[in-house]
Image 1: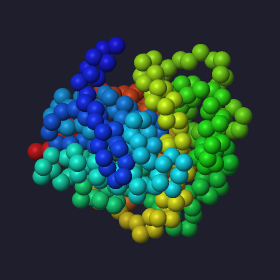
Image 2 (image 1 turned 120 degrees about the horizontal axis):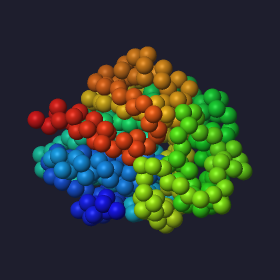
Image 3 (image 1 turned 90 degrees about the vertical axis):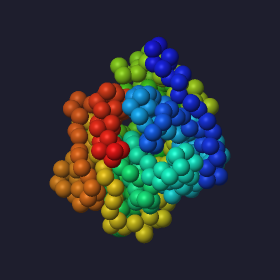
Length: 330
């Protein structure tokens, strides 16, 4: 339980931003680092990073994104309110609220959906970002000829998880059979270096009677924290990000062929489903990634590490973040 003792130092507050009430965890003083979580996670995904970077002279700020955790005010019944423009709007307002006077740019760390949002933040408001450490999801240039969901369906078929997430209420109904804790644990335990398929019936490949065995990098208490929050909110808020993918595509026409113009370090595990998606490795290794993100300074591939790399290997990730941001903190 040692983590909980140190976690008590983390301060929590509600911040009114962009028409919603955003729950924020923060600790430390110094240059601000904004941590952006993914699915199915919360501010809590960054617990190790918050403690480490706060103790190394940074002001760590980790919100629950709209639709998640203790953040309220986003209408989860309406997926069109979950575009990257909405979420980046929330974060720009948050930066303006939590940054120190005269601190016009902040450091950003993203993972999974948080990485997608971080790329978008850098495209829409590069003036707000000093440098970015992004994890798991590489930049995805907009394809002007193909809507994302059509693209995924053509590549992977109807059982691909992003396609299965599209119909409001459908996957929520399937998840309800297993219960929140079991569903979360199935995601956290996913280590196949392959795309995630969720065939109807038993997509998660688990039984409602199986014992719940948490991954080695997590405690039962960690899983209980996530479970408590997701039992309260349901999964719809998080799933709405996937349901807004085609709308994102429609709205981001102006950024076709736009480059990410902030300094970036990218980290991914070699067992991550994203790294093993069709064309994933090739995009990163062929030089295309660097063309789209000209200030990409470093790509780190962690061996034997899966999707939740910042929790699975916190010491390594903490050092990577710290070393990269130190160059810009002088």
